[in-house]
Every structure is written in C-alpha cells, then in structure tokens.
Length: 286
Ligand code: PDD
Image 1 (cartoon, rainbow, N blue to C red):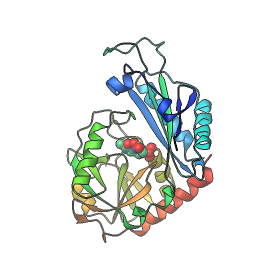
Image 2 (cartoon, rainbow, N blue to C red):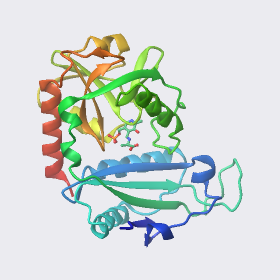
Image 3 (spheres, helix red, strand yellow):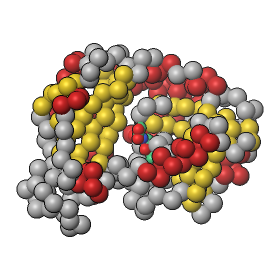
C-alpha cells in the first residue's frame, strides 16, 4: 500500500511527491532533519525534536517553514493517514529551490522545502537486540566539524555503517584523537560502577534528544553522570555500555572491536535505564 507523505503543505501519495532537481537539499545537502519515534500512535518527545530543529535552522540561517503547532498537526495527520502504531516520522527542511546552482545562499524569500513521511516499525520498543546487545567496531570520525547541526550530510555515517556490516557487527563508534565521539546515528555511553560516562555537548556530537532525557532519568535514579570524552581502551574496560537514539531508545552495547564489555552480556543498569526511559516517555507521549 502506498504511503501518504507530506510535501510543502500537501498530503500526497508518495509517488506524486516531487521535488526540483535544483533543490539545495539535493545539490548541496543543504538541509536539516529530525526523526521522531511513534509508540502506540503517539509522538515521543516531540517538543525536544522541535526545539532542536529550530536550533539547526538558526545555526544555518535557514527560515523555519512553519510554526511548531503546524508541524505537530502535520505529524499527527501523517500518523493517522498511514495508520502508524509504532514507527517514526521523518521530517526534512531544505533551503529550497533557487532555480539554479550557486554556492551562495539564495535570497531569503526563497521558499524552504518541507518534507515529512512515516516509517512503520511494528514492535519498535520490543527490538530483540535490546536483550542481546549490539556489537560495535571503532572507526575514525571523518565527519565535518559541526556535528551538532542535524544536517542531511550523512554519507560518512553511511560509510561507517557499511564498515560495521562488513565486520559483521551492528554499528560503528566514531573516534577522533583517540576519543569516542558518538555512534553512526546515536550517542555513545559507558558505565563504570555507578557512573555513566558520555561525551559532553559541543560541536563534536549531535545533541541527542534521547540523551537529554536519559541523563535526566539517570540523575533522578541517583546515578552519577560524568560528561567527558572516553577512549576506546576505557570503553573495553567498562562494566556496561550503550547507545541512545530516537529509533533505538536505549540499546545495550556488549562488544567493541571484538572485546567483550563487562560480562559480554546485557547488564542490569542498561536494562533499567531502557525500562525507565520507555515507561516515562510513553507516559509523556502526545
Ligand atoms: N539519528 N548522533 C547522531 C549522529 C545521530 O544521527 C542521532 C540520531 C543521534 C541521537 O539523537 P536523538 O536521540 O535525538 O535521536 C546522535 C537519527 C535517529 C537518524 O538519523 O535516524
């Protein structure tokens, strides 16, 4: 069955949604995006995703396509039209179609392009991998220097994901100057004793919406949170490790570069964090 997607104010069958070849999203990766998960037909942490979208747009001097209220309305309409129970809504804003190719940004009155679509993922919160954990490899972080802006320049993360596939593991942790930055499409954490260690916010990593919520819940659960970079060697010697993202929630990591982390099994702390996150976020879903 064909999906109904959203393009610049219209709800269309996916085959009818067309964008110009001159759109700067296509020619320059001049676009930003958000992925919001849906559980039981409701949006998880929508306000967080909206706030980060606003920040990404501002950092790139890009106009907001519409109000947050209109975005919420469109997300809900797509969930309804596509009958999504569990899955996600993808949103992308580009600097639009100036009618030609030019490195300079077009005039401010060039209309942005706004695209949204759904992906159905039945049982999203019950992923079997949450019980067995992910295996990851470390690879050099060769992305640009403004990873805090959620742009659609995703080629290097795709390459890193393919390196992980070639190594028969689930994902890659990106490493810069000996320190882990984050996963290909998620934030990375280790646990030592009662302490969660994750890289501090800066231009080096995406400011994960799931990260913010998980660190808040961890503090409320009397866990210590230390925001600093960690090395691959430190991760290999950790008790537990995990990643967070809107699509994987809290996902245990049990192996790094072939070395078991802790007991090499999903640990109690990660399991608890995942439970708290899903319980609290389901309660607050809209
Ligand atoms: N990725 N770091 C990177 C590089 C990411 O691409 C993502 C999200 C995250 C986690 O952010 P959040 O918790 O807000 O989802 C961290 C999304 C899910 C994606 O590209 O599909």
